[in-house]
Image (cartoon, rainbow, N blue to C red; front, side, top):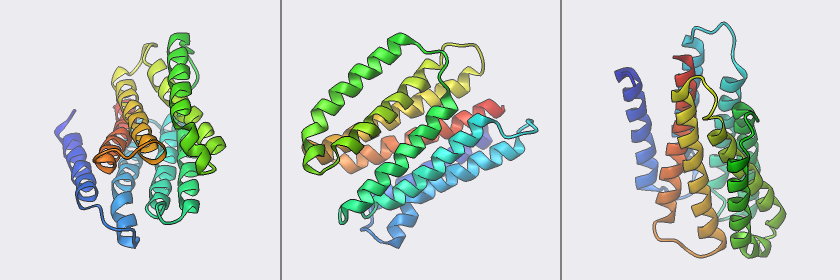
Length: 223
């Protein structure tokens, strides 16, 4: 990784650190601080696309950018989720669309039946663990759909490691996807199962790191 990219990553870490440490109460300022790291990643991806040697925007780059934009809106919605269930539902829907965008970016080949089976079992286990809590909140169906999408996203990110190509980009996307899955798993446990100490910090650190990994996969492809 070049020094220039390292500097960009450092700036992202600083922006993320500010929100994670200060954890402002729900407000427009909180929305700004929470979404700022993802907005920065969007700018990084756009700059990478514009500066690449390709004469067109690839499906991968456009889909990752769409996923980041949708995630940013999802972040904004979730700031007020504790006070209004409708914001949680809106955030869940926006992140579901973000995962669909990432799935489209990662593609469906190669299939990799072993990883498919692993993530299917993992997804069923997580859904069983969280189902009663989601049902009490009227979110069993939506939560189940979201679970399918994020498990599929994780599966596709790892499955695409096998074919030849730019392995750096694929590695970044795989690491990012797994961290995203961990973040949402902790969020689900904390919200629908039992309170977890330092849950918000764990969730946001893994989430920001996950989005960084996926965004850096665009840089890896361009170089």
